Amino acid sequence: NDHDTVRHEAFHAAQHCAAQRTGRRYGIRPILEGPRLTEFVETVLTSQEIIQIKSAYPKDKWLTELEAFAAAKVYTADQIAHILNQWCSS
Image (cartoon, rainbow, N blue to C red; front, top):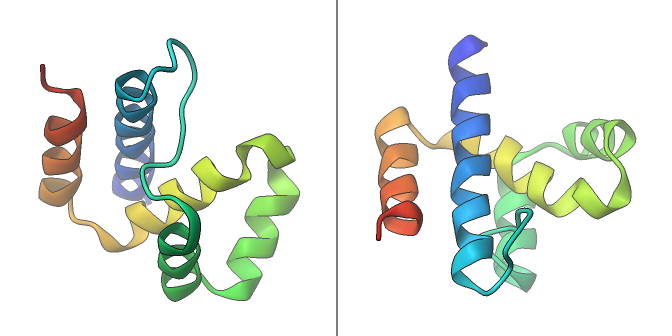
């Protein structure tokens, strides 16, 4: 469970870098967009998990949280590190 939390939070860091790279100075945004994001989340998370996440977070956080929960569930620590390097390296 602790490793899952670290992967989740590390993915948020990558989302933050993605937001900066696409012109947002502050905040985070999903790395995937549109149908790719929807397909990823719905493939990885159960309907019940999606409902639980949506009930725990405000609507403006849903996409980033859903993506981070799904990423933490399927990506290894090495894969998350690669994503971080991809988005956060200069």
